[in-house]
Image 1 (tube, helix red, strand yellow):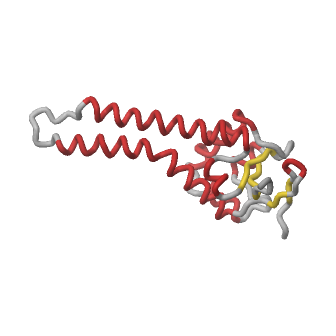
Image 2 (image 1 turned 180 degrees about the vertical axis):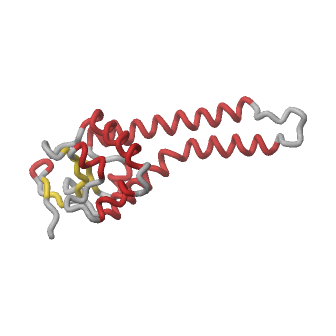
Image 3 (image 1 turned 30 degrees about the vertical axis):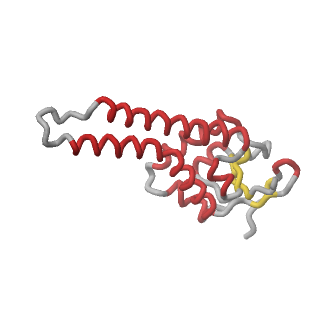
Length: 160
């Protein structure tokens, strides 16, 4: 059965397949989590380097590095997945994989509010082991569960 098509900006766009959606998520995850990973590595190295000392507590700079990494990662997530994707339809990962998030009613980018809701719902559904991520494999409209709740679609970007 052929998947339905949607029309962002007066151009027909087919629904995105599962592979590019997962790839975009991996690219976004790598970008967003790199700062916290660096901060965590610095923190752990400091903890292990102090293990033989009488005062083996981590140094303040190591704790600050980890907290700064967390803050930067959160900021990147907020900018990339909520504001950038909400306003343009594309996170960095979606841009690289040439796919776009659109609203199922208006066929336009969903806006930051709905993008935030979509992100939060994806976290809720993530606790159902991989069901949300795998759902597009058998869904007629290639939607995740959080896409179904918010009536959003990921389509191939035809605006290039």
